[in-house]
Amino acid sequence: METRQQGLLDPEPVTEVDEEMVSDVDLNNTMTDEEREEILSELTKLEEEISTLRQVLASKEKHHSELKAKLGITPLSEFKQNFNKSWYDMQTSTAYKKTSETLSTAGQKTSAAFTTLGTAISRKFGDMRNSPSFKSFEEKVECTVSNIKQTKVGSQGGGGSFEEVLSSAAHASAQETPSNNMPESSDHERTC
Image (tube, rainbow, N blue to C red; front, side):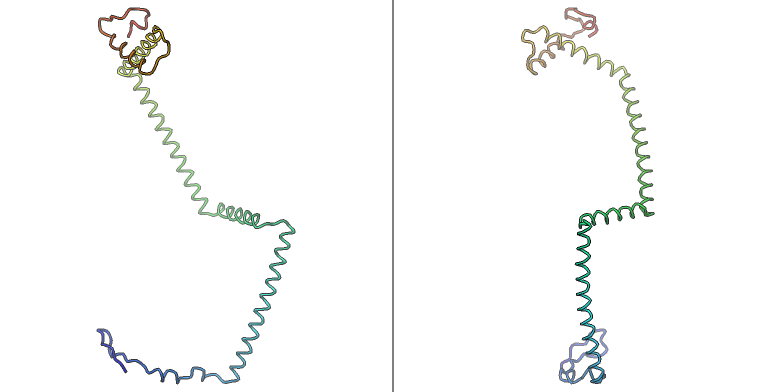
């Protein structure tokens, strides 16, 4: 027999058991031959019953599918029906109702917050548009656009490229000076 090294928690050394001693032990010595035959007989009967039940079940399943086919019930229609029932059951559950109410309340609050934000932004844009600096900027843009239009109308070719429009706008802006060297042709040009 071999012994292994003793560990810290092992109170005694562990020894290997002889295999011959283990094979000599008969585990069935508690049962008589009659009891054994009775159990084997019962086991055989159970296996036969299980086999019969499987055959009956297979026959019933076949009949079941034939009846469904006659009624026009397909696996897809069954799936839809099961899904609809599950969906209905979920919607009527307490958890779903509470969650739905919570989300509805959150949606209403979010909608109100966006409405308030939109009103505030609109008011700020209105205030900004009425400010003197914005009005001055707006007038300058209007004058520049008006000058570009007049320059384009006065040109021979009509349309022109984007570069030509930009250069004419730069030319018109260069002509804007405090001495107002531009010829007066309309009331709008006088204010530019």
